[in-house]
Amino acid sequence: MEENKSQKFDAIIVGAGPAGVAAAVTIARGGARVLLVERSEFAGTKNMIGGAVFLTALKDIFPNSWEQAPIERYINKHTWSLLTDNSSVDISCDFPYNPKSASIFRSKFDSWLVDEAKKEGVYFAPSTLVKRLIKKNGYFCGVETELEEIFADVIILADGVNSLLARQHGLRYDYETKDTVLSVKETIKLSKEIIEERFNIEKGTKNGAARNFLGGLRLENAPFALGFMYTYADSVSIGLGVNLEDLNRYGLNPSDLLERLKEHPIVKPLIQDGEMLEYSAHLIPEGGFKKLPKLCANGVILVGDAAGFINAIHFEGTNFAFASGKYAGETVLAALKIKDYSKKTLKLYEKKLKQSFVLKDLKSYKDVMENLYSRIESLMNYYPKKASEFFKIFTGANCKPKRDEFRNFIVHFIKDRSLRELLKDAWAFISSVFGVLK
Ligand SMILES: Cc1cc2nc3c(=O)[nH]c(=O)nc-3n(C[C@H](O)[C@H](O)[C@H](O)COP(=O)(O)OP(=O)(O)OC[C@H]3O[C@@H](n4cnc5c(N)ncnc54)[C@H](O)[C@@H]3O)c2cc1C
Image (cartoon, rainbow, N blue to C red):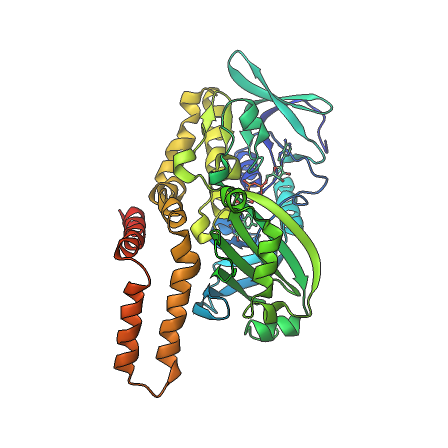
């Protein structure tokens, strides 16, 4: 442990990702003694993102220093592509002057977060694996590492998606395969100039692009897989996330699926002649609102991925992590003030989450993933194909009357799929939209 040998803190935070750091700085700013424990030698070495960090949440935690964060590119161009076997229908948006997210490498970014936290008085213990929590008289009151026991009034679990500690102590059940996505990603080196040219980025700027892909895996039984690409300064990431249950059901290997995406005729030219720098894989918790763990108990609070705070539809996780860390920090300060670390007092954390976008979003999106999974074939094959056929007519000038072509398109749209299936698709879509808006 750096800087301090004393073994009693006001709060101990396990895990130095965005959630842990946000909690730690919030508590330190309130004048309390806080220890941030991280199993890796450098924060971020074992962490993964697609990925872009969301700037509103980052600015909220570090309003004065966020611009010094090791940002690779500001993501101001987003493209969503419906892929068929050999074509793509895209929706794009470009916000050149107001980027909302930025691509980062976790190893650099998380280390920067920790350096900022240390400047604010947080004690940092790297290379320290917490093996279990210490519980006395019904209260969590410390952590046991490989070397020692360290005590605190409150423990915050910010130890990420697996959160062995929460599971060990009955705060969270094991995620089921249907609630968990395995994401695989490659980082591919390309020159700045090539990235600017292929992603239509203004030369010499720190602007960047993100692409998301649905379909295009060229499999009869394609699983529900969302593909992604992000530009960095002189490399790009390409990856996809697939539900673990689908992988088992179809006997698929995620690396093979990623190869299929990379070989797609629309995707391949984007990464051509690139050199693979890194391959990584990580789990994402997608149980959402229906699978929330116990968010607090006597002397303990769960934040970020450890609590399952992810909105997969929007690729959001870091914003939930920063925000939940901050609310947990504020709750700990309130508890320290009255010297009461009971679940009853720590419930303030849940109240803050409920009043914020964190639980509001998780609640309103609670059925969306399930609805999408129930329509896998439609999403992965049927609609990308139909969108492509529609735009072939729209842009084709095929020397046939448009009226005949569009009529033919509509007849086949209904004929190729039973009315029952179309109604099911429509219901899944409408109930998802209403769920989010209600
Ligand atoms: C492929 C992929 C793409 C993603 N893309 C995006 C994106 O584009 N935008 C976005 O906002 N989010 C994205 N996410 C989600 C985002 O990465 C997470 O939501 C976020 O990192 C959660 O932060 P956290 O602090 O809760 O957990 P983590 O970042 O996972 O940090 C947990 C920390 O705890 C440490 N730890 C674990 N166990 C122990 C222990 N026992 N003792 C000590 N330390 C321990 C770990 O080493 C780690 O540093 C993506 C995730 C994946 C996997």
